[in-house]
Structures are given as structure tokens and as C-alpha cells.
Amino acid sequence: MNSFASRIVRWQRQHGRHALPWQRGLVDADGQAARDPYRVWLSEIMLQQTQVATVIPYFERFVARFPDLHRLAAAHEDAVLALWSGLGYYSRARNLHAAARVIVSAHGGEFPAEPGQIAQLPGIGRSTAAAIAALAFGQRAAILDGNVKRVLARHGGVAGWTGDKKVETALWQLAESHLPHTTIEAYTQGMMDLGALVCRRSQPACSSCPVRMDCIAFTQKRTAELPTPRPRKTLPERQVQMLMLLDRGELMLEKRPSRGVWGGLWSLPELDMEDDPARHCHDRFGFTAQSQQAWPQLSHSFTHFKLHILPVRMELAPRRTTLPGQIWLTPADALDAALPAPVRTLVSRLEYA
Image 1: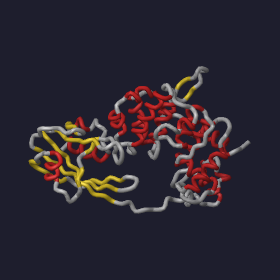
Image 2 (image 1 turned 180 degrees about the vertical axis):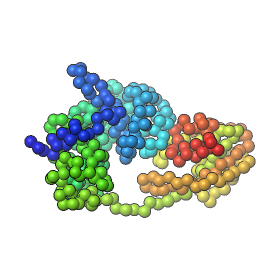
Image 3 (image 1 turned 90 degrees about the horizontal axis):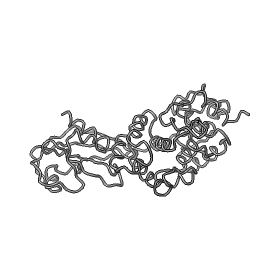
Image 4 (image 1 turned 45 degrees about the horizontal axis):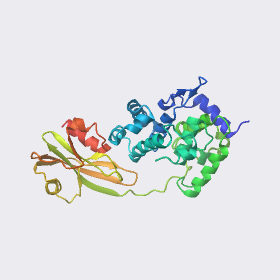
């Protein structure tokens, strides 16, 4: 039988990825290789909206510090966020930490195997739950991440933006229909690998695709138009000043609220562009600025808006108090804290200024 799934499995075994760090797992009672659910889960969370090449060094640092679920659950959130710093989408790290504690408290420290149970953990949706269940436990569950959406939209000729509910429902139906009854691990990994390595967003390598002969996009020469791109929207832009408050070589950082942009991270004080930095510094913190210097603008793009930052370096008269939610660190020590990417850039420049 030369089904869609069997071709994907054969291709994956010959051409797929087999040496990714999270694929190094355990040995079961029969001496056979088995995936470590903790490593599979961690990789799936890190890979959400993030490329494999970007994830690998973060993954390796993370498992070196937190090699198992129990040590992650016992960690302080600041330590988790510090290791995540620079990877973005920080709610993933907070949910990961929360889920580890739920698994320890509610599941006796054993990662649940059923997709429905996995999907109840913080930060895990239907596709991620299915990927963990399939790759770590051999459960028969369909996935639909970005790569798989692209493969199925092209192969099935499904038009429309894949984020649209009706289109997504059609793709889930296709995903379920192609699901094999055996070799689920190789099939699931194969779908991910095919989308990442062959059925790429631009310049797909159709000549290397094992399912090209019945792929509608390939046979109808529509690979450039499928899947349908997301409707373009102009990103709103926001401008802020960020204060680099220095006192005797130490920089002030303040904890951001747990929810919202950069939730739970250590950042620099922000103020509106029309506000006076020295007055703001005095009125809000009670500090006296002895000098200030504006630095060149720094821009940072989020999913939904673009942020333009005007950094202002300020040397302060010696402070008398430290308010709750503040810490003072040398720039070198601050780089070990959980910092948003643009703040890390500014602190790095301070370190070498």
C-alpha cells in the first residue's frame, strides 16, 4: 500500500531529522530507544513560532540547568525566565514552569500520556498535546502546527488563510484522515520534517517530496499561492523612553507585571516621549539626576506592534532607598537576569561603554 502516511514514514526514515537534541531519549525495558517526555514537551514549547536553529542552544542550556521535570518544578520563576531570555513569547516559559508544578502536584511527577490530559496543562493546545502524545508515547493523535498546515494546504489544495476557522477545520479533517494506525512517531516527525526541510514557505523542494505526485499545489503549479498568505495589516507603532538609572556603577531594574508584554521579566523604567526624564525620575522614585544622555533609538518588533525605544542614560546622586520590585546590579550581573531582548541589548552596551 502506497498511502500518504506510508510515503511520509519511508521518507522520514531515510531523509528526516534524527539527531536533534530532544530526540536523544531513554531506553525502555526491552532495550529499545524511547523519547523522554520531558525533553519532547520542552522542545515543543520552545519550537512554537521559533526556528529549530534558534531553539537548539536554548534547549541545551535549559536541560543542563533543569535536566528533569522535578528540578524545573522546584525552580524559582526568575531562574526559568532568565534562561528563556531572548527566546521571546515569555508566557511560554511561565506556562512551562506552571505546568511542571501541576504535573508534580496532580500527576505524581509522571507526565500524562493522553492528549486530552496533556491539553489541560498550562500553555498546551490541541496540536502541541498531540505532538507530545505521539512522539513521547506513541499515541495516535493528529498534529497541525505551521509546517503541517503548509503541507496539508498544498497537498489537499486548501485555499484560504490557515488561521481562518473554516480553513483550519478543513485542515484538521485532512490531518485526521491521513493518520496511520502504526508508526505514529515516524509519521508525526516526518510531517514536521517535510514542512521544515522540503515543503518550505518559499522555494519548496518539490522534486524531493514523497507525496508530490498527488499534491494539488504541485500538479496545478500553485505552490506559490498555497497556503494563502495572512491578510496584510500595518503594524501599529509605539514610542517610549527607557531610563538607564546608574548609581555608583549599578543599574536599576524593575520587575514587570506578571501579565502582559515581557510579563515577569526585569526591565528598565519606561515613560512617555513627552515626559521629562529627570522630573519623572524624581517624582516616581525620589532620585536626583546628576547627568543624562540620550542614546540612539532602538526598535523592536512584536507580533502585534512595533516598539521604538529612546534610551536615556542617567547618573544619579547616591540613592537612599530601594523600593519593592527594584534591584540594583552591575551591568555584567544584570546580563544574568531575565531581561527582554532590547533591554539586554542596552545593558550589553552599558557593559562595554
